[in-house]
Each structure stands twice: as structure tokens, then as C-alpha cells.
Image (cartoon, rainbow, N blue to C red):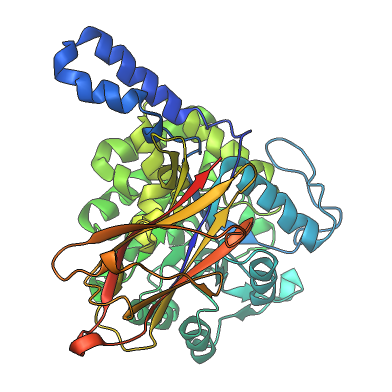
Length: 473
Ligand SMILES: [Zn+2]
């Protein structure tokens, strides 16, 4: 009984909305130089409005923080690079400021950490857009007499088993003088491996002069990614990513990722803290080492939301990256690492116009498999719709193994919509189009529920392969 949500974030001001257009132009200019008859299909695709997307490619921020607005003092200190002071003067303002950047750049998911209370606050403010973890170890005040606090492992287990946390970390052990392979971390690695939780490990550097400025035990050598080697041998199923590109441990980062192909890396902080030249040189080496499918975008946004745009600029200005490589870094690699349903986050491929001019919204892009199922089992799909200018609506359902129309019940916004008998099929998927009553679909969120209502003649369930909503304007 999973919940699926489709995101349609309209974002006409996004500066990367032109990416798909660029591709179309590229295809067209290639066509000019090639034999027309061999590429007629490509021309068709390039010119067919149904294959064009008006949505920018989604981005996942794999490394941000859910902090209190005054985490570093009141007033908050300026950004180290731009010298701009953040405007937020409450937690709500801080959350809103980050979410405004998510909307501006089409960041569909943010994976971040902070204290449990603030993580809860951020997730409650905007559900479905954050994966949260607790940053640890924590240090008590005062700075010169502090005590290191490690989370209770049993409490931790409960938080993960109840889905309150989705990420382990950011583990900032280096700041406490604890190396990545220190036995203190062993229970956390073991728990993450057992529960298959992604782990974010701080590696590499920290704020310059850290040992003199509140982190007396910080040591550069404890952030060397290669220290993870024995951990990975002991915990082969540990799903871990090394933060900040492992910078400046380039050779060690390549060595580790080359040998242990389950390891991913995020490029947070180095994409806006370093000079573009230094960041690009480092990133290019990682890509040249064939690690491009395991590099993930991140910002390390703490209290300066402008770092989101700075981090994206650093990728956009990397001339050695192809559009495909950028999309891998922005989105595809994180989807693989986090084991997400890609279609859920890809609005560009789920909304388009068909030949008749109807706006088609693909609600289901990956199979809803209810085989085996017990009578009463159900799957809920939710979809956001923009209905302005829509004059009539219909739904197109492709089902498979539906043995009788009484077996499968479909509810749209809690009202039953009868599936016609044509959908009954044992051997092949069948598609039906059903005109919907006026007013059944509503602006904003809509839910569609499929229920295995009756086991007809001993059948054990069905599949819904495809659901589209047709909006005629
Ligand atoms: Zn970090």
C-alpha cells in the first residue's frame, strides 16, 4: 500500500527551462547535414509537440541542512564568499527562503540534516520534499568545555523503523576528532547496513582554522575517504556517500570509488566555496575517472539560500560536461542511489500535448503491481492538476490481468468511476478511455485509488500499467 505522488512544479522563470529546447535545435542542425530519409524519424520526433517538454529537468539536493535561522548567531553571519547576510529572522522565514530556491530551480527533493526538532519542523512545513537525518555527533556548550554526544542506537533504530528519518547523517565525526574508521562509528554503520539506510559522511576539509575556532579535535587526516576501506569490507551492503567530493583528497576519493562501486559522492560546498577553476578541475578528474554516474549534486545550504544558485551555476559553467552528464549529476545518480521511483519526479516526461491538442498528464508511469493481492488491498496515486481553461476531462487506464470489472474498483477523489467491460483481459494489457463528469477532477491535488475488490474465480490480483488524464482546453 504505497503512496505515489506526482509533482508538477510549474516554473516558467527557471533559467534552465531551455535545456530541452537546446537539444531540439541540436537535433535539427544535425538533420540539415545528414541524409534526410535516414533521419526522418528524428525530424518527426523533434517537430512533434508531444515529445517536447515545457518543464525544466528536476534536481535533487543531496546535501543541505535543516538548521535554526540563528544557528550561527543573531544577526546571522554573512556568506563567506558573497558577504551577503541572510534575510531570515525566524525558522519559518529560513525554511521559506530555501523552498523559494527549490521552486526557482526545480529542486524536487532535498536530503538534509540538523537536530531532530528542526528536521521535524522543516518536514512538517512542507511534507514530501525533504528526506531528513540527524547530524551527529553533537557538542554541548560552552565551546571550551564541551561534551561530545552520540545518538542512542535504540532510539535511532525506532526513528528509522517508523520512517521519521530517511538518512543517516550527516555524520560529522571528523570535527570531533573521530576518524571515519573509528570503532565509535561501528554501531551506526551496522544499523544503516541492516536497515538499508543511506549514509552521508562528512569528509575532506572544514572551515579553515577549525582547530582554533571551536573544534579543537578537528584533524584533516580523519576526513580522508580512504579510511572507509575497512568499513566497506566489513559492511559490503552499506549505502554510503562521501560529502564534499572528499576534497582535497582527490587521489584517495578516486581510489575508493574505483574499487568500491557502491560508493557515491556529493559535490556540496566545494561547488560554491572553491574558485570555479579549482572546482571544475576537481570535478573533471572525477568524471575522467569514469565516476560520472556516481557524482551527486548538493549545496550544503546552511543559512545562506543563495548558495543553491551558486552551486547550480558551478555545474552550468562546467563546459566539459554534456547535458546528459549534468542531468546525471543533478538527478539521475541520486535517484539510483536513493532507490527512488524516477517517474514520480520527472514532470517533463509526464505532461505533454497529444495530436488533438489535449493536455495529457501521465499519472502512472511505472506499473502498479497488485499481483498477488488480497481483496481490499489498494494503491493510492496522487496528482496535482492545473485546470484553468479546461473544458472537459477524461481518464485513460491501461490494465492487465483484470478478469472482471467487479475485480478492480477505481475511485477518483473518493467517487467510484466505473471501468468498462472492455478492460477485462487475461492475456494482454487493455486500454480504456472514460469521460469524466464535470467537476470530478479538481484544481491542485487529486487522488486515484485502485482496489482489488473481488477475487473473481480465484484470481490473485491485477496490474495497472498506465494511467493518463486528458485535459481538453
Ligand atoms: Zn559536511
